[in-house]
Length: 68
Image 1 (tube, rainbow, N blue to C red):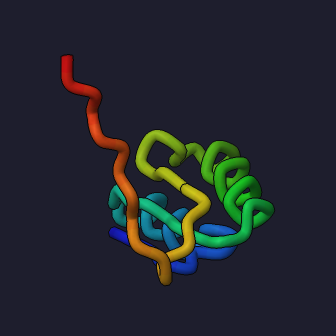
Image 2 (image 1 turned 60 degrees about the horizontal axis):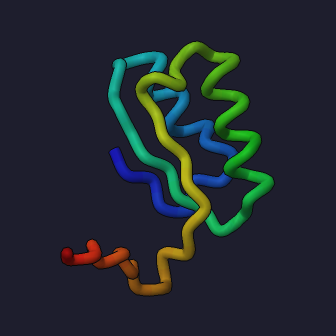
């Protein structure tokens, strides 16, 4: 499950607890992501979920590997 604009992560945490899904939560708020990480750990589902600070309105820029 991908939750864009996940806020405090409560939806992903509830889904992980009730149906065991795995998921990724994205939000622009560092405070919300920190809280979501703490709550997923406290609820015992941090192994199923990842939370990242990200702005979904911006393109994803991936680092290019350095060639020898």
